[in-house]
Length: 192
Image (cartoon, rainbow, N blue to C red; front, side, top):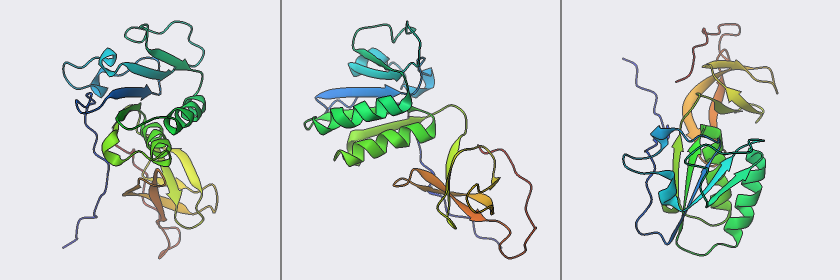
């Protein structure tokens, strides 16, 4: 009998404004917010302030064409400005992030560094199944893994992507799959 591998996979719930908050800030990694990111009956306008990564888009699609929306040219630009904004923020702000998993956890990392607690940060990951994977052997971070087995770009080990997520490192664990029997690498499968 095989024991199931324990998982600490993050669970995401559609976003809704926290009624106990004095202010809300929604950040997203794309100019068009996926409707599944918001709870039933909730619109982006209810968050008051929305930050989007729009790249070089000159006009934002609705609902982002409204006032209270700030557009950024890149994810790194948004994250830098978010760090500055949160450093000057007072209690009562709730931060909401929607986008691919690495983005929402980058947002959470900026918020934690600014002193926000878990209850003040709400995340919803959607989009392609891209995982940031950390090699436990050499600490290399592989940024956009889509399969269950991947070659580490740091040490060359064939890594199995474990169902273990580090919220601190914003990465899934990658462990050498053929450590006991070199060359015995299972077929890669698409990650869900």
